Length: 213
Image (cartoon, rainbow, N blue to C red; front, side):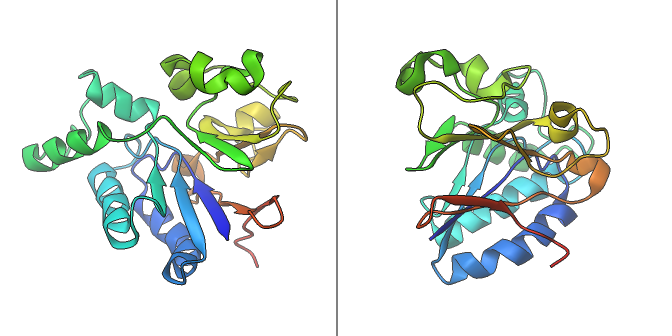
C-alpha cells in the first residue's frame, strides 16, 4: 500500500490534475491512500474547482482513502477574514466549501508518518497530539528541521516553501532534512507543478515521484 501526499495547491487546478494523473490509477486499484495537507485556495483563480475536485475524489473513493486536512488559508475563511474566492464569488459554492472546511481534521497519522499542514509541538515527543496547538498544526514558522526527540515517525508538512527551507531559491522539490521531516510545498504558483511524496508503507520507505520518469 502506498500513502501519497501533496500540499499547498493554492487554486492551481492544472497542477492538481497533472498530479492526479499520476495518483489516481493507484486509487482506482485500491493500492493507495491520498493525503492532502491543506491550503487548497488563494493563489490562482481555481480555488472553487480545486476544492470541488477533492470533494469529488472523497465521494468517489471514500474519505478514508482520500484524506483532506485543514490549512491556514481554509482557517482564514472559517475565521471570516477571507473568502474562498473573492474574484469569482459564488454564494452557493462558497457556502458549501465553508461547510466542508469545518469537517477537515488538523492532522492524519499512519504507522510511519504524521501528516499535517505546518507542524507539531516537537518538544513533547509522543505527547504531540495533546500538546500541539492550532498554531502548531496550521501556522508554525519557521519550519523546524532535525531529529524530533522521542518520536519514531516522520513529520510530513507543507506551508513553508521548500526553497525557503533549503536556502536555495531554485529548489522546489521535496525537502528531507535527513532526520524527521519531509516538507512538500514546492511553491506551485511559481513552478506550475506539485511535488508528490510517496510512502511505501510495506517498506516504510519515502520517495518523491519523478515527473521526468
